[in-house]
Amino acid sequence: MGFLKRTNKKFDYKPRYYKGEGNPFKIEHKLDQFRKTAGKNKGLKGRFNDAIEDLKTPDKGVNKTLIIIISILVFIFLYIIDFDLSIFIK
Image: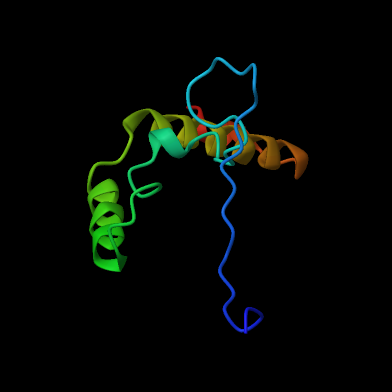
């Protein structure tokens, strides 16, 4: 009764003339190598601890850039609504 015993077939195809490392057909996100939480299957607790650790050490450059962008957008908005900016200057 061979039709009752089914096994999953796994194929490990490697091209004949490929000289690179690893499998060229492996699907991976571009930024996974820079993330701490991606790739390793540590379980839910390990991922949660990594995420909390990342939140405790924020990137200072990103915060500075975000503040600059938000301030520029606020000044553009104030210019569009014709807000009088002279109240800030003595």
